[in-house]
Image: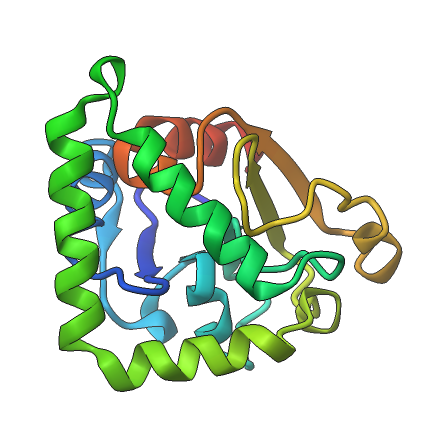
Length: 192
């Protein structure tokens, strides 16, 4: 897949275009085109609960990148949610661009209110989402950020289900892709 490929982003719970603006900009700077239509994209990137909305009929030439989908069977949703809130609060600290983190959290709240129905649907879907059952596309990269409260670190069993699955670990937390998009461009360019 060439560097001039087309990318689409599927946002997760309380996320939207504002969150992905750095991400889209960095991809464009590296020669990628960005589209809102998954059917036209060469690369589909789904962050968090965006994994629920990946089209079922991907073309064989499309690359799917799942970043921290909500899958931790041993942990109840309420515990994962509490850990995410703590993670968001801890991210607003002096050495971690506190104004950006606070601004991001305000936008999370705006998207929570503005897209209430979609967010309620995501919460319902999170209770039954089974990543193992969803890993049907042979060109899939699963990214787990080291400090993510939503995705289990125990992922190797997924390779038994989908032998072509590529699993990558990156530093950072759940929303790292919005803050450090260059890591994901680097991962993409080194992995294809």
